[in-house]
Image 1 (tube, rainbow, N blue to C red):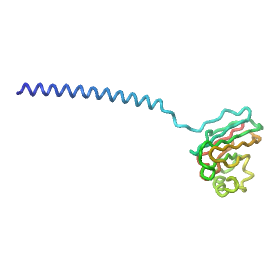
Image 2 (tube, rainbow, N blue to C red):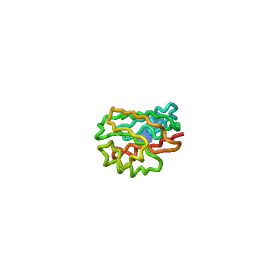
Image 3 (cartoon, helix red, strand yellow):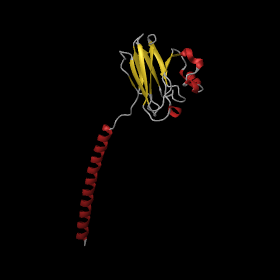
Image 4 (cartoon, one colour):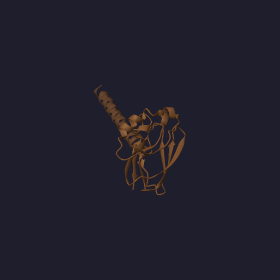
Length: 178
């Protein structure tokens, strides 16, 4: 009987050892697959910077995610800028409208955005801030685009934003004139 117990214990030990060994192999394989998948997963998209617009042509895209695809736009001093704003989303302008507003140096962006909330009938461009704006587009909705042309201001760094209510916190950037 003792011999049977010893044999049974040995067999149980071997089966457990083999079972754990296979489990470790599966865990290692799973870990490797997970690591490979994590490595191959696309990075979260963040707004980038456009190369200097040598011919003055700029395309700025915003979608239903309330993000511009560019956080920085570079142009040359005195250049004629042709800026096209594209709304890549599907929502209408009443729910998710976008515009582009280029502000003069020293303008309080937060104050401008707050005042813009009450300027719905003027594409969220407050009349009281007319002197603070270098250029702006009309407000557009999903699937629409609009183009404006303007002369680049003097060398320096300027703020741009979408003045649709609540958007300026995320939809903003720097307009750099070299």
